Image (spheres, rainbow, N blue to C red):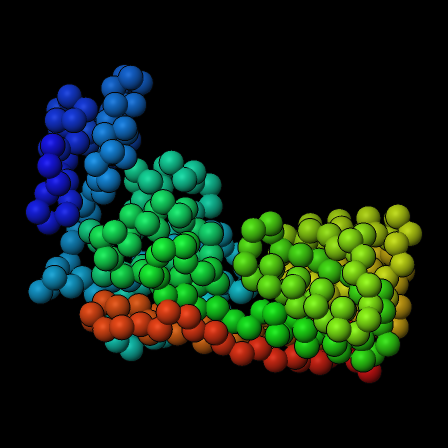
Length: 338
């Protein structure tokens, strides 16, 4: 079977390769009707082999444009994502585009590969939040020259996909230097999820700043916070129960800082007198914690807006900036003051 001239295979091609009818392929794609397991496996194998993406039933084409942009992201309910969405939407609406959302939470990579609902058939381009799509999925879009911009994730090696992120390492260095300037020496770090690039650079800034001030790194003072208040609360509670001496916590994001503050207060610690706390992002609730949270302000809305702007350039056939790195700043509140 040869590749179609437009770069795409059809449902008929899938049916031929799987040796079934197009109606059977349709039932598998739509998850309606009964299909034998072996037959379903053949169809799914054919879909993967042909790199087939089903066409949307409601296309709004005008001169090849649909004026629709997709955002693929890993989860919902985070104040960080709410601000990001606002920045993306504002830039898109100003240029006449509408935004479609797809949350990958609860969907396996295999499911997305066969049935990714946002793709080149129903959008003009995609903004992909960190770790929402696999490397193979990004490679597929790159092979088809489909406009994609990454948020808070650099592209896999060999892929020329623009990326928008923030100065994570510099921001972390400012936070840790401030803690040291406040006389803190046993500074703990709550990391983000394993493999997360933002967390990697923030931890690197933490380590390098300790070293620059002659403070030895202690692995016992680093725990996974997973960008989660609940996980971070558990981590800090464990430190307290183990009798680990800390006089400051640098959390990789504000959710983690919020969990840390709660755990410290439950342990009878005063903030910042006993333990100072600094977060990262400066999301909406940061100023309303008790005490108000010192944090590294990341331009969340601007990151979303810049990602949309770069995607619009790609969709117009223009050259986008390969890496947009936005500055961060330290915002001092009562959770860590000199």
